[in-house]
Length: 405
Ligand code: SF4
Image: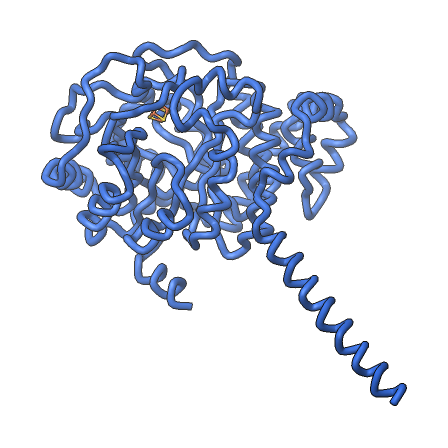
């Protein structure tokens, strides 16, 4: 009898601990990066980065598995004298993982309508510019020109105007062009998880969402009006993208807003968190530096070419699998020299205005591009640097395989 009772109590204990486990797992799944982010203080992290020493940098360089503390050392001022060594290591690691290849893509702006005020953007609501959202026939005209240059990867970009550019509009645009591209990426306003699932099912391969700055207190001064002023909603977007099963997530900060070292630390922390939680997902980081545009503020912080090289090399040493992207915001000289140092993709022949390729080439750009060379010239540059320009490295049928898994 006593034995029976003991057995019964044991079974109840097992049941209770199983449901506690389920509860904890459920709680963990619902947690987002915000939980990690809220434990970190901007000023403390800044002091920690600027306190790194040559010894910390040498330790980071010698490590085989680098941590976020190593990343901090690699982006610190103490790492500047080690830049040559970092560049050589970054180059070798990139070649080992990606071969000597650079993937090419073209951005296509669907709309410059926007309900947000972002003080650094030409499409900001308070800029009195002519607004345009491409119709289906206009999208096809733009695509015809983009395809004529050989592109198979396209990045669709839009402002945020929920009455005209919404999920239904995006879905139609993607379905309209998906037979013509092996890889479609999007850079739209943050969406809900269910909406990202719609994008995934429509044929989207990757979603880019940049936090712009991780400095919560000053974020509001750059984004005073509109849905983008909600810092936390944007911060939690990559979690929603991961939950929706999107194949690749792109992160980044806008270089020039705040201290690039501290912002990059938070971006790397975000990446580190996401990789652990969404381990089947691929990741990329882009490096947009502030560029001139209609009615925008001057950069608060100057990020020079050497700083940017240090940052790119630090990311590569931190993460061998990470895709690193450089756009036409950068100068010809910088793009010529950065090819062997760690980047894996580049835009080329870009237009940053809706209709810029064919429909209305003179409409207002989101920002001025710096490298105005054509796609063909960039492909030639890549080949002349001993690398292979890649127009297609993905096929949508792979995405179907993953979806059906
Ligand atoms: S950055 Fe994006 S959200 Fe902000 S004004 Fe420009 S288009 Fe709108």
